[in-house]
Image (cartoon, rainbow, N blue to C red; front, side, top):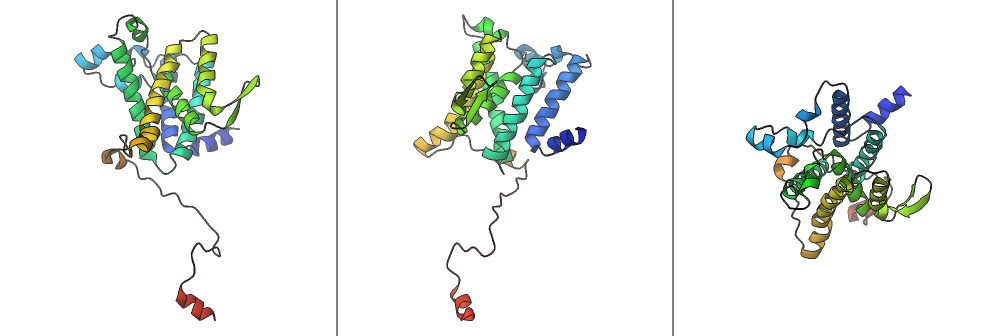
Length: 245
């Protein structure tokens, strides 16, 4: 059993493995009171006036208490982050990292701006950890890229992946969780999907082109498609034909 878990962990792509490890370690350390969540949550005042810039990152690593909700989000993080990195972003680690960076930036911006808008500022002020929203963003992006995959929710009913975010949102509401957290993830995910998939097809421009600085951080391996040695995709050279006669 332990060996199977170790193999499963080692086979994870680099970004998924790093994020999952950081999230689990951070949450465990907070549960054991080695680290205080008060030093991790998103606080614009402390970031700007006291230069506590680490809060811009650590608020995406803490998943609250280690309970059923924690296991639920770890499952979705490991599954959909891995599916995206291994399939949609295969051989494009830098692009996948840039997607997460874009999502984190959008989520932070929405919370900061929403905190200044009347009538909703109180709701946004309660959102001090965005880890669940970033996980939900990955679920949303995956569902948009794989809309026709058939899925089942706890064995009760089946649906296609395009409706997965809405099914999970409804489930969150039923169990009494805040819908804002999931909605933020859907907003960030839709912003990325539109700018990366829809807008380039409409205009021929790609506004989310990964910066060269980020590309320099990752050495992406080329995707090689193997084929049988005897299969030809073009006519043989004339010289080879003459030699075989």
